[in-house]
Amino acid sequence: MLTVMLEAPDDFAGFRQAARALLALGAAPDDIHWRWNDTLATRVAEDDLFANSASPAEQDRVLSPDALDRLAPTPGRPVHIRKPQLAVLRDACCHRNPGRFALCYRWLWRVLRTPRLAGDALDTDWRDLERLAHAVGREIHKMHAFVRFRPAQDASGEPLHMAWFEPEHYIVRAASGFFMRRFTNMRWAILTPDCSVLWDLQTLRWAPGATAAQAPGPDAGESLWLAYYQSTFNPARLKEQAMLREMPRRYWKNLPETQAISTLVATARSRTGHMLAAKGDDQDQGEAAGEGSES
Image (cartoon, rainbow, N blue to C red; front, side, top):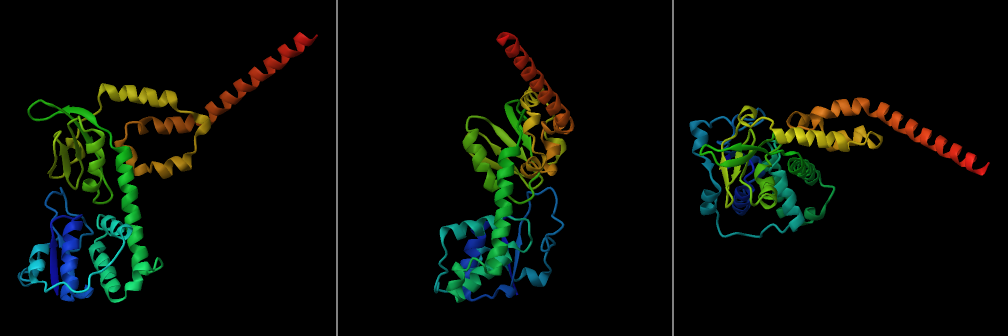
């Protein structure tokens, strides 16, 4: 058995480097354990089967991707996959499933031996990889949509906008580029249990994970946002099930606008009824006025 130690839970670059060397060495999937350092996290995931320290015997067989490169002989026949497939593997490696790296390697191992599998969309391993990648892509989209920055100050008193988010998967690194491009001229930080990221106007800096208590509380601007949200809410266009699909309840506790959603949803039907009744009265009055003018 061989244990591969990656630098982080989402270390796709390290996985790719290690997989290339392992395939060249002819290492079978069942002979490899995948582990990763999670030093930035505030807690160890309960489903991380390899989070505990290895025994002395296992330590002798723990290798980094760099060490594997030094062991690998001259590379043999490489695995040829398309860029979209590489993107699926990259996203799948960000999933919180503890077997994600093993699944990715097993599929590559099989494709190396049977190249036609690379084009088999119904292959069981490939469908599992797509399922993991889809969940990660959806979570990245949710992070882009549901992060809410609040004004704060850093230790030196400089302005710093901060946000708290609880991702379902290891997506902070993959999602941070969006915020860097969108808020280039603003110093900001996003705190999560897995790790924290700071944009200092020049580079992204990584720090240990945090707790919700370390994030700033509501500010005056948040009250204005709630007032705007309530004033633009149209009860006649409410589609509650569609709303829950796009904004699942697990995100609600960290979104300021959700303080008003329950009340708005509860009163939507009655407000819609009043709007329809008012419209009907206006039509009746208009018809009455038309009849009077004809007589």
